Amino acid sequence: DGGWGAFSTWSSCSADCGGGIKIRTRLCNNPAPAHGGSICKGLHSESRSCNTEKCPINGGWSAYSSWSSCSAKCGGGKQTRTRSCSNPAPAHGGSVCKGSDSESQSCNKHKCPIQYSLQIMCDDITTIFVDGVQKKVAGTGTWNKMAALKIPASANVVGIKCQKGKDRGSYGIMVQVDDENGEELFVTDGSWKCSNQAQDGWSAGGFSGGASWKPAAVT
Image (tube, rainbow, N blue to C red; front, side, top):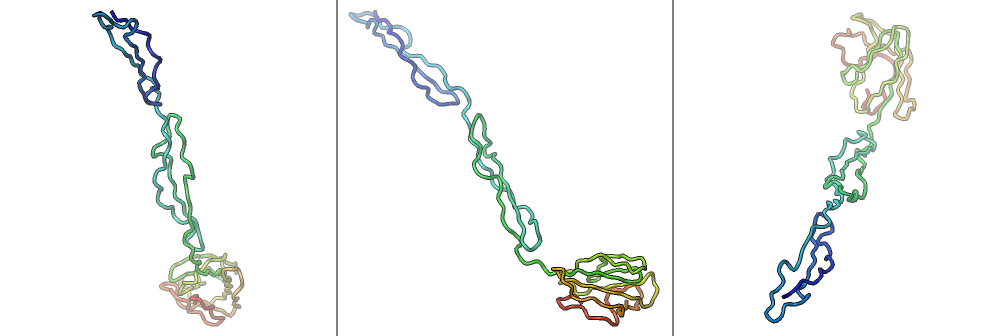
């Protein structure tokens, strides 16, 4: 009758991770069956699982997000967009994504419109309008200077009202205008007078006397 020989060594695992199989075999040769003897009973091989730990998953980048708003409306700003290491996310010892998770680009590189800095002194409460929109009110009737107000060059009408309540009359006024570099364009003298028009419905300049506004759509 045949008898089993010793098992061979285990084979290599069929997978590096995630679960594989390895096997070993034996032969019916100890002794081999002869002269009508019976063959060996049982299996000539056996197997077992191996490398059952989960496989590492290397990270992959997601798609970029939309660009952020530009950091400046003009004159050159920056906007960014981001991505995440989540497609897939690294796991089980896998490597993280290589490279940066964000990128940036320049935006709104067109030149900013020129702005003028306007300062007012008046002997009463002063209100400034830009294109009919009230921008600032200041003053106590004591010739206090109103802080600089930025006026865009695209403004069509810059109006100054320096009379209180519904009273009519002329009031002394001084105006200083500087360009966007802080250079003085002109300063009026006390001969400038506010309009005698009543405040209700007041919308335009209507000054008498004094210097004219500089060009560049500031009138």
